[in-house]
Length: 332
Figure (cartoon, rainbow, N blue to C red):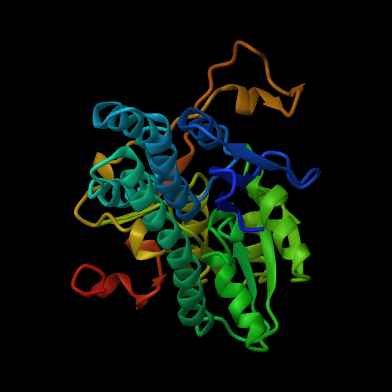
């Protein structure tokens, strides 16, 4: 199954519950917008491209369950605000909403929105394959690639951005190994990236986040490759910890690559204008149900950080590879 999809027979969104992996594989059904918003906030579905498709399907659910345009727009605003940092969520919502507005009745609006949402889902897979084609040329036979968080098929509809590059390189016969950081506090690296790569029999070694600098100094890493939640005019937003890896890779002269679809680009905006989502203190105080810190400790828990272009070797898109030196001037 794809990470997220629409069930035509039941008229619902179906998605893999990523909070349960790798121990359990379960499909979550969302029949209403509030159920989808809850799934987004709880990270049952996550990753910029997947959130874009979730947003589009959310518009379809809204059209199903409202009586008029006023109610629809109210549902849409709640959906857009479910996670503020990744631009793809609002991108998907806006695309499906624009399509829905062509309808004269709620039923017509739903039909137009569903067609657009399905189109977006298909585009996501095609875009990831193109990113993989361009990005695979940057990987050499025998490379060991360090990645952070999860930018694989679980972060998209299918294939993946950063992991899609690795998958494509392996399809072309290159021997690639992966080092995956655990990505605290929710361990998307250890739970999701490692699970994906083992499913595909791609060699992967799990490390703690604090080991990243050591494995680079020891010469165990040839390239660093991550995804992106938003690309602004000065750099890239991605999972917290990305900036740390970028700084260290620069110090060790290891190329640092970002794989991102153009739908994640927001290059008219400055990093200073982007709201960084801050998540619950409980994510640091507890690991699962086990308490690992005092309950009354002050917690700072941003979900993302910003990496400037001067630390990035290139951004890999479905239109080609963009180097920071000509990033603002290159037409894509």
